[in-house]
Length: 455
Image 1 (cartoon, rainbow, N blue to C red):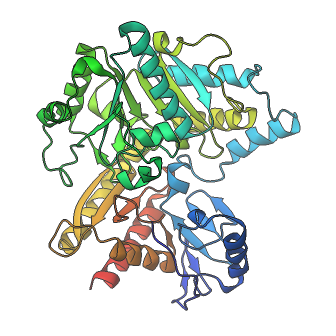
Image 2 (tube, one colour; image 1 turned 120 degrees about the vertical axis):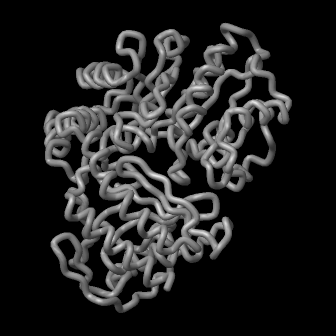
Image 3 (cartoon, one colour; image 1 turned 30 degrees about the horizontal axis):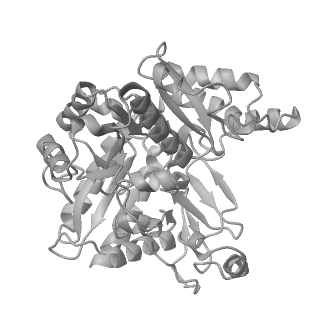
């Protein structure tokens, strides 16, 4: 992750309908806030471009010194319905004025409403249930737990392995990082776990082989028999890209899981809730997972996650034995209900698919212009990513990616820090409600920043 210089830099002023830059960047008056954070919290929290958010509305983020940025982060793919939606604020205000702020796992009415709504968007509303949690890591941990429990109870202890993919990210807790596929993120664990096995992801760039035969041969190479596998977990698109499965590969993976009664888990924490032009990104592949991990865009605001899964798997634990302190927090649930209504009523999946026709051609044109520096471009709907490489190679170039990221910040375009294996990927994920003219303007700004840095 990039470390950003906190030295204020004089930059050209900007004043448009959606962007304003009227101070040095970072703002000199903001430095005491950063200095306090350096004293009072771990440096791990200082990995994003140095602005202090004051307001976020629609697709624009503002500080309190008059600067405004078009947001290409959605707060890391949270604000799918846009920042500061009045409908979500009104739902939260109603709960606060109620007042109803916390219930543990005692029932409140909103919990029944939200679980029903999540079942309705599942692959089979009659056969799927929803379990509400707080974070994406909790959701993926519970998917792993349920898959292993199902395998143990139905097939015995020999069926214990979780297969995941290289370069995958499933969260920052122990089980989520054991399933993750980025070695440097799990160095702290101190040992390999033989029950978690990673195989190459068929992204077509970092791994040119996109055939399902590679999956089977990787299992053989690692000494894993299909009968030993409890579950297969994958992001519906890998967040380091975004990298999508080839459709044929995904369907063969599903058939493999059905053949050996393996629980197929799709991690939709980043990918879900209309982001890629469908309600869930696995729908692009025409497959039906057994468990779905949800988060981020489920509420467009407050911390909430969910596991949506087959009734027979979700029901493995007795009453009181699979809960969470803030499961179905009334505030987060109210936000999610309002959010799901917005996603449906404003047809934001269809809107994301339509905006793809503006986003991807502009990025493809830019990629061709800088082909020596831009290794590949992947995207669907309103999520895309460009891999920045050292000229004429496939070697990641995180330093150049960060320079482009900073140039965008100085021009009024906010992206989160470059992601990827080395921090080389420029990730593009504006709110799904971004106005068309704001998207076109921000694409021009992005192109200008790339031209400036890569000239």
